[in-house]
Image (spheres, rainbow, N blue to C red):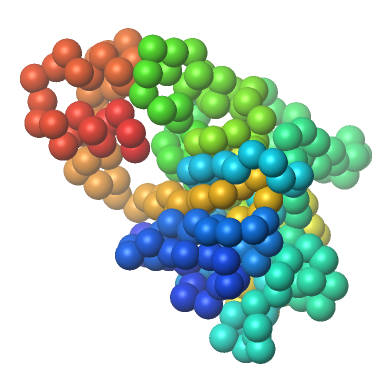
Length: 268
């Protein structure tokens, strides 16, 4: 599938009553309770376009985590945003939403079902793109990164190999749909750069599909991560060139570079 022009991703201004968006519309925080945290993408997704978020903050004491999926409902058509994405949105139809758990997020395909990429060896460190059938997604932004610190070099590798729980802080979770012909599509979840398989199959793709993110229970705050499909930005190209010549991103502090560029290389 041909890459499409990059477009800035934002949350829809219509959202759950306990959600507060930041000024950029890219960070959603649940400010009280454990529910009423349902958010939508501001615009429908294109086929093969990933809506990627990072878990920024968590809140102890609640049972359950982030919920992610797609809906064919236009947020503007809702009389009120449901308290829960599951079961409220899913039971009303035209919505496909799944809870992200600490384990068991991967969909196991039957060996005879033509699983395709499922049997390929993992290439977290070598492949520049994630391939889901005919969809190519740049892997650069898909994998979570630890907060800079003494053990960042260890934790970053755990994110890269998807060994940490998907519900951990800084984990990155994305949702997209892959066209399957006859106006149908499959929904895929991507967790820290790894495709979890088709979470929902046979979704009607003739109507616009918005991403759904339910900032639920133990998940307190999420932010959208912008994915560059076309030409990389100058910042990204500089970061890639620098990272080829350092052992770890924290070593950038030893280089004579502008502070803004150092910050980008370490945190983004």
